[in-house]
Length: 615
Image (cartoon, rainbow, N blue to C red; front, side, top):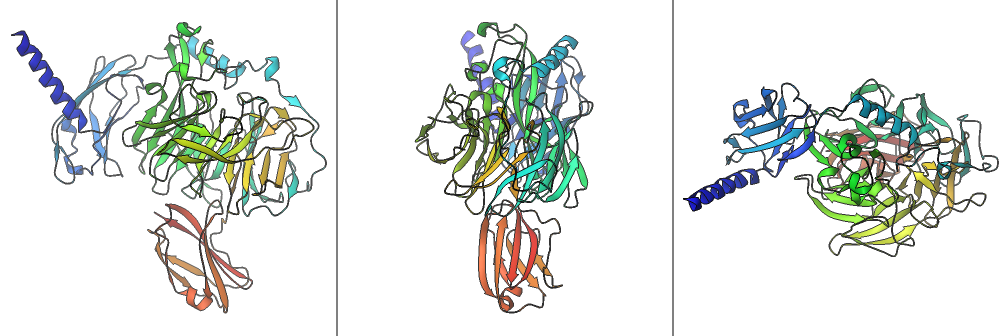
């Protein structure tokens, strides 16, 4: 009889496994803890789903405290993800059981077996814990170091000599402007000596010569201000009394929307990806109380910063969530990240991008690690560790420092290589520099093929303890932001050519001001411009799939050149011919990545420009 019971239990487990296996992604995961009261449920099989089969009678949600909870069930705009929205929040500290019945159907007619999973809702943070967290924010930096510690104090040096130009923005000095790449500079002014104690001053756009394009004063808005992949301007909106969000501006600098995260989460300033198809990606910080870190010399009830990544579809439904605590240990933190305080930040996501293969690449500063994630199921594909990392799948080669340390702004550039800003906190001596790597994902190697070290300024190394960015521009130049330098008075932004010559450099006049990132992007807010004639250019369909028809009626003659450039100024298409042959022609740009581009036609002294969107 005992054997029969064992066999029956095994069969039940097998059936349950097969049912769950029909869903490549379930969130919250079975057995997961510390979930928010405001959370939706996500199911994804991977196939296109039949929306008519997604009925509420197929989902039962029961809370151990709140009882039966009604819900709505809808299909995401991706056609694959099932979004289940409870009608009211779960109770704190309760266990939730979700039973999905048989009968959900794919578009091909396959009927899916149901599944059952459970998760736990976090407890509410106490008043004392919240006070302790706020005190920590006001006294510690991102690495858990005391702000007023002697080794944390920024050193002031005399700023460089008189600027090349000072009569434009009254808060900017331009020191070099010699054959810089085309584009405008997007910046956010922050004043302070640490990220926590800094105060915003405003955000804007300037020409390389310092001419003002746009500026808006604000103590709360503008961090990470730039042209997002959607073609709209975005930046962080910070409000202590209301949810932190992302403002979206049109080309006339009018706010068209305030975008928020969902499920009780708020975006961090680090990365927000607004894609042309309407999906949005956010890096998020979640300070969770109640962690027992006594084994590492810490508190028995520490508050730990858990890094989240959240994706919303075009209708703002949550379709993907990923949590660092479900993939890493607190001991994965680098040696300079304290685990002995009451508040601990062991992972600290600070950058991400969607790779060419559709996978997600994310950087975690405080454990010197970059990982590639499959967004279909949340699994990590590989780990790439820096000099302070406790683990790596990828071997770093030919790097002058043996690797990178506490990096920011990792990205895939147009030549297929990886670029990042190496802050260099664990280098000896600490020096910050942009680096470019050839990443071989088959043989798991990363070969450093380019880096730039700024000359010393008044005998001091260019070292950025926090923040920073580096972008490769259309003409091969590299555009560098030095974030929050350890030395006040150093340059805030530098552009170097392929031979590492400085061709552009600037600094805020106030030596305590800095920018989290700097962007250099083509910005044509009018959309269409014609220098010498009243002619026009029409592109249709726009948006489209890349196969477009041109119709130009400008009274032009002679030779002409047509170019298509990305928002970062990278020329991705060029064609020369007579204006007559180009005026009514068809272009095949379907090979380009989805996003906004600038189409330009030049003939003599005349120029026509039009933004195009490839979806």
